[in-house]
Structure formats: C-alpha cells, structure tokens
Image (cartoon, rainbow, N blue to C red; front, side):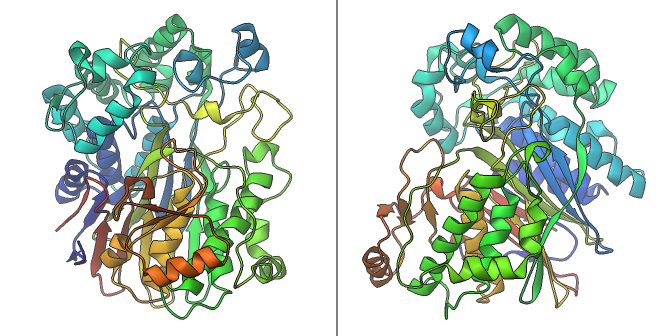
Length: 530
C-alpha cells in the first residue's frame, strides 16, 4: 500500500476499518473532529478489544484552526488502597501482570471523551451522544468479526488469561479459541454504553455505571473502590513543544513519554543524514533514541513527583547540542537500557474546518489485566503493573500516583501552513515509529503513505517481547544492515511486515484545504475520507 489517499472535507485514520468508518459517518452527519474521534475510539473499544477499551486510559492532542494546541490527560491514578503493604499482604513481591490485583488504577478514557466533547460543544451544539456512540453500540450488541490479529493474540495469551475472571467467558466462549471471522458479541458492554448515553459519561465515575464497576472490582479483589472512581477527573494540560527546521512539534506532557518522542526529533534535526533509510539516517535515529530514552527513564513519571520540567530540556538549545554531540556518527552506544512495554491504539481526525485531533487510548498489555467485569462487560487495564513496590523508587507505587505511560499523541505545524497529526501503538516503539514516519515525510519528502509502509525498526521491546535487540523489518538495503552491525548494533531480523513495529497512522492538512492520510498495512485499519 503506497498510494496516499486525499480528500477535502474530512478524514479519519485508525487501526480498524470499521472504526475509521464510524468516525467518518459522524463527520458526514455534521459532527466535529472531536465527536468523530470519540466515535472512532468507542468503536475501537468494541472491534479491537485486545488493544483498547473503556476500562483504560487515553490522551488527546487537539490542534485548533486558530493555532492553539491543547491536550487532555485522561490517565487514572492508583487506588487509595494500592500500596506496597497491600501487595505484600497478598503474598506478592511485585504487582501481578494479570488478574484483579493488576487492575489497580482508575480507567480514565471516558473522562477524556467527556472533556473533549465539552470543548466541542462549546464551539458548536453538537450531535447527541447516542449518535456519536451509535456504531460502538451496534457492534457490541449485534457483533463484529474477529480480526486475524486478535485471534492470534488470543491464542498466544490464552494460557495466562483463561483463568482470569470473566476473560474466557467473553473472549473464549465455550472454552474455544476464536478464529478470524468468528462473530464476537459483548451485550453487557452494549448495555453499559446505553447507560452512558442515558445518564451521561460522568456516570462512569459518579453514577450507576460507577457503582456497578466498583461493586465488581471489589468483589473480585481489586484494590479499586467507588471513592477512587468518584475522585477521578481528566485534566487539561499544556502541550510539550519543540522547534526544528521548518516545523513546530507538539506532544503530550508527563506522565507520558512524549518528551522522548520530541527529543529524538530535536536531536536528529542536528545530525547529518543525506537521505532516508541510509546508514547515517538509521544509525542517527537509533542513537538519538538511546539519548532520549536515557533522559526519559531518569526523569519522567507522574509530574507531581518529577524533579525537572519536561519542557525545560526541549527549550535548552545548549543541552540539546551537547546531547547531539554525544552521538558517535560511526559507533553504537552501549545498550540495553531499561525497557517499557505497552499496547494501544492511535487515531487521527481532521474535519472540514481544519480542527485536527491526535488521540491515543490503551489497556496497557493486550487485554489489559484480562479482567472482564461481569455487570458491565468492561475489560480493565493493567497500567498500574508498571509501578514498582518501592514507593521511593522510579515510578514507585503510592496511592493516588499516576503511572508512567508510553502513550503519546503527536502533532506538527509546518512553516508552509500544513498541519499534521500522527502516532502509533507499540510501547517502546511509539517514539521510534513516530520519528521514522515524520522524518521520512517532513525532512525527506517521502509521500505520506509510503513513509508509513516503508520498513521500520525497533530498539527494545513491545507487545510483551523481552528481547532488547535492534529489530529491523527484512526490507532494508543489506549493505545498510551490514554497516549497522559493523558499527556495533545488535541486529535482529524480523518479517518484512511485522506487527511488533506498531500500527501507525498520519493525517496532513495543507493550507489549500487538501487532506492527505495514511494507515498502516500492518494493522486492520484504513483511511476513511470524503
């Protein structure tokens, strides 16, 4: 897939074609890019349940036509009862990855939808919530075909998930593994979505839905309580910003790794690389990634516990110059470094007025904690398993603390008037894939779809992989790979199109009103446009 779709009235991209079409239908019905993004996100929660759901977290980056850039932090904090003593009393030296004890942070996604829609409604009356959630409701109630990717992930994770409360009943009915094309239903989730339509999205935290969620979580042994849900609110945060040649870049502030994504691009902007995908290009971006990840893993977490401001490093040109100068143009720096995991979905929407949305939401691991709550059909995230049990350590568990997030939605404004939103799923791979698609498009003039289809690499791990080698898709020039090995990179070849490289997407609006979009052939997605 190399041709870049184009249109003028509106465009949506996401990793599942039905979700993209759900968003486009909202645009056609007169909805804003924000309403279309909620429709797409809600549909993804139903049709892509291994990657996302309303029991997870989300982050929004909104680029307004007047030049403003605003973000929403819809990240839930650790439960009031979640501390080291709670897990030690349960016989654990670490937080379990799966099951009710892994469901230890509030799910913030729905609060992000609510805040974003309030912004949209302040601009225009808007569509009824029932219309925005229409397709998600339909697919939950009437069913949706299981994708090949979801079937394979379920097969891979069945052994560790089959005994988690509610998982097998929902995703392995009759004890059988789902096959691609099987029809998946979640009528309990449909009922929950209808309750949110009837009572308002705040019901997830302070209404009937909240009481049902809390009752199930408590009964299963999660530390989460109704008071934790009631205390949660999404927050409006300033976007992080970095200036490079020809463009202003934007991303999400901590507790996300958005600063790492911007650091990679700011450092690479200072390096010489004549063309995309040659040795200087690949080596330079990998080494910039190492510098950015070292900064991230030293400083980034819940901003309430950080000792530095993430924006400061991006504004410090001398510090960036020193970091770039520390990159040897011919030799790989030592690796590995601490590695982060995470699976998620990214989506983008631009409407006819030029409002652009970059949005990302996640359950953390595939299927999150694996817990499917019996009253609501909600799959709960396991984001809090990233906490350590030393409360004074990096990302140490404390009640009310937000966990570190790999999630980071990206955007850019170019000097020539273009606006771009882009992103991907994939844990450690998110900043790297963002760097690949952005630099190929923006610095080297590669067409948007080709920039995403082109071979990618991954330093570190994603999708639960433990390997921290430099993995590369088997489509690079062999001479470039040979030079990378000679420079000291630990290279590991993977198939030509590998899902471990994430599911990327991008949209661009030109000053003329022309829209361009791209989706990832590694996903089940598409660009939907009119």
